[in-house]
Image (cartoon, rainbow, N blue to C red; front, side, top):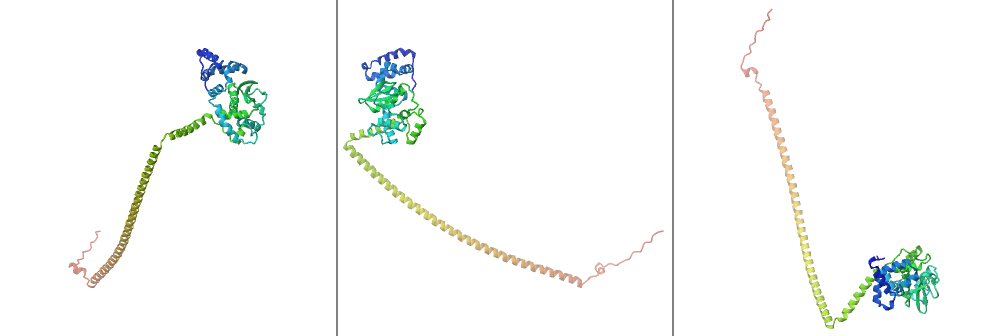
Length: 367
């Protein structure tokens, strides 16, 4: 829903433009669209305070489908005719049925939905006078009239536009849905991408059938983009002559040849590099083997030298111990001989000192 600006100073101007729209026969289509857009705020205020018959009398532009679709687009940013033409085939595919095959796709969809929800079809589409004040399609003499409050609002000979106008009546007149109407709720939700009016039974059916709700403007940019790309390709290809085609072919051939030559040179360089790498790896492996053999030889030599050294050390230590034992034996023999010499040739103490012994007299004690 868009914001509708309003200025009290320009109310007289808006009223004058609304009066110009009362006589549509005197105004061309472009001027009608411009005046219709400029008076939308004034119209919305009048609709909230007037009956359906008074609205039609004050704004005869509502009898024009083009102006109705333009106002719906301004209020909801939805292109209803485009949405109907896109969504109706998808909904029929998602709700397969063998009923109403002879009907047009849009009318067949309405009847299939009424059958699914067990609703009377004449409440939405009938060939007699409508029996309900809610928006109804009345088909007579190959023209479809859209009724609201038992009043004919607008008519068209396009079935798709008729379904779009049926849904547009709820937006234009601010109508609420009937509590028992579920088929029109589903159509409104799918076409307007609005799910707040769905009942639980409608949501269950949509989930079972895999019916998605998304805005129409999300679909249009992708479609326009693909169409513009395809049209650009189609429009540019005929303008190219045979000479340019041959030039492009030769250029592509030369590019392919150069690319193949580059690829071959790259392949050869890759092979040379791979051979060099293999040779270097082989040399490295041979050097490593040679170094490992030398290390093994040096280890064996060192081991043998260490063994010899240990054996020589052991021999030296044994010889030293033997020599020490011999020296000890000699020392003990000398000591024993000395003792024997002293004992054999004893020298008296007197002869050694050459002194005589003199005895001292004994002292007597005085009494």
